[in-house]
Image (tube, rainbow, N blue to C red):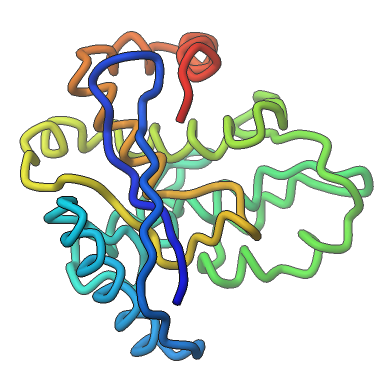
Length: 216
């Protein structure tokens, strides 16, 4: 058995996202087929708790929309050129002994995430993106900012999607990871439902203020 979160947009209170832990049978292994089995098991168990339908947001999603919304595929402009959110995130990191490694903007998401410089350049001390500096705290702030910027161009389409009760990311393990695209997407949907998205995205300072006053 395993336990993973389902992220549900919240429309009241300070908490933008409700995180519901769900236990389900786990199929071990790294093969994509095994991960897809785990998505099915997670969604079945969540459905039994009244959470349905769900959208898996990762490259392991059975739905194309779920794959396209993953940080590995979702597009964002970096220095005037299209790249993925994952490449923008990794390539913007500034370490004690190097970075930002903006050449990663032109790599595949997998290449960017596995680039040895990301692991061998010392402590992460900040982010630099399109000539601006961004903090490492709160810990998910910069990742969420990039993901929101990429989603923002699709906000009208997202606003019309009422069918999903929540979102999952089978690759996200809270014990080992911090950033989660499914949680970020749920927060984006929550801000749409609260009619606060436009204000939040008007500048990074407004975004930061919103995120610091909320809990996701």
